[in-house]
Image (cartoon, rainbow, N blue to C red):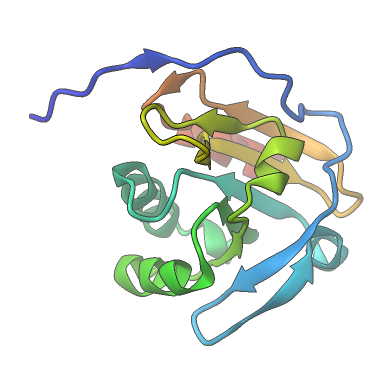
Length: 168
């Protein structure tokens, strides 16, 4: 068993349930190609499960996307990721994980900061990553469910996310 040091993350004023999710436009990477898309374009099509996670090479990305794939969430709702990784790294992650989702690329971490989910990486001056977070956003961009990590590493309560999806 791998022994991880658990680190408490500072408090954050993140987007919460009942608030309007900030709109943004970033490259949205799919299996075949990527293009600039806005969150509002996606929510116009229906609810969105926005899954923020550390960069694609982090072990947390593997665990989160394996869980999303194994639970079949992409069959129930649009699932999109958000991380600081490039579109090229996203294409690799999608191919390796075999998940039918699309991933927003936010290398400058502007969206991450706007959502209040930034995490300054120790020992990496100038690098801000996304802390793990999940936002279930309805067609009006109202956040119906929000979870944001308080420690590093931390993972969402996947059963609670499923309950929120069922309540939609």
